[in-house]
Length: 142
Image 1: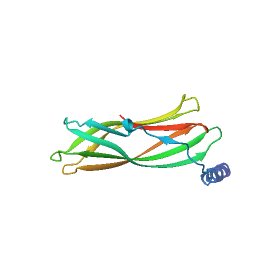
Image 2: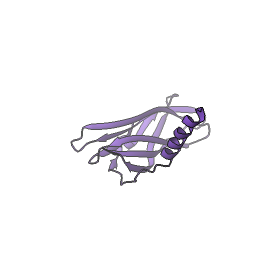
Image 3: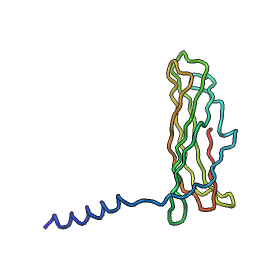
Image 4: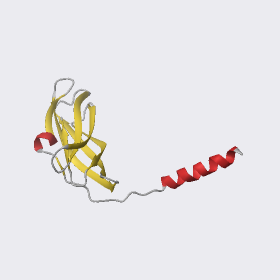
């Protein structure tokens, strides 16, 4: 008797997993130079260049907005490679409507690890947000 109740639930769950979202063109994504490249201080007080070095986007249609997935490559470059170090940073992505009112935001604060002997370190980071259909997106590092 109990198996009859579980079976329809499993079919319904399986049916949802095959749902495909409709891909759409992504809204305009920009990053002012002052937010795309910064000089940060590492935990050992060394200057480290941090910059956005590649962005990949994927957008799909939702009922009232666009769902945007963004993959960002962050590059760290330093001169002192004699020690392991970390550089703290915050990556923010914000969507706005046509009147520049904030619609959605995704942020990630982390410390980028700088391995002993490594001058250049890349990190790929994933962000997601909702964007109004007539909106724009801004990306920056702090």
